[in-house]
Image 1 (cartoon, rainbow, N blue to C red):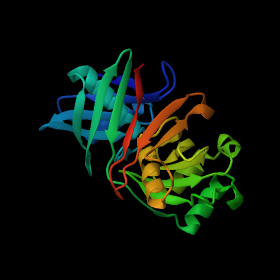
Image 2 (image 1 turned 45 degrees about the vertical axis):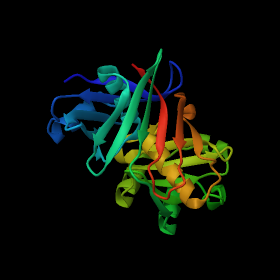
Image 3 (image 1 turned 180 degrees about the vertical axis):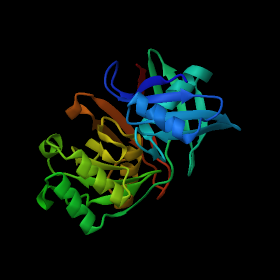
Image 4 (image 1 turned 90 degrees about the vertical axis):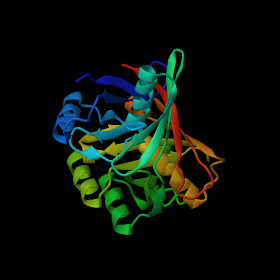
Length: 275
């Protein structure tokens, strides 16, 4: 089985979140895909096989299957553009149908996904208190303009906005405690963010549920965050830019475009590089 390694949301020839990409004639059994993802060791590996007018797609972390992964979709879009030429490709996920567009912008590769529908709701107080305890934060560290929320765009995330970029940079937590917390709450990840401006955000993204301490770029969370900002009436001017991975030494850049329609798909785009 040939595994391509592509970093999504890269910055030039550096950064980005590595994903494994497997293009195959038919999807292997789930246990085989999980084993391959564990061998690859990235936060996600995506598997895609031709299906009608598009591709059947599944995503696996080293320890679990996830319903949607944005950076692996961007990596897949780049791989499909290399294999089939620039274009837009239909992807059938476990629970939704989306598209990814891939194109070559020599020497770079580019891709843009259209997320599943979005939705958000205020996070329960008990969940917020447990998250603050996990990261050794206090209520005073929370940005009152963006109350903690459960946000979804194909997967379920907890969004926690902080008032301080320094607090974001100092993020620490115990992996096993985070795994138990996320699993019990049904969360794929936790998104810690800081709004530098109305349209520029810094983000960190623990993924303990999948056995990964932190992701350097997270397209699914970018879509969920953008949907939450729309629901909350945040003055986003139609798009936000997300800076992620800097505190890991893996600079990554994501752009999320936001239409006015509540719950509508979010377009998340960025560069990709072969590894």
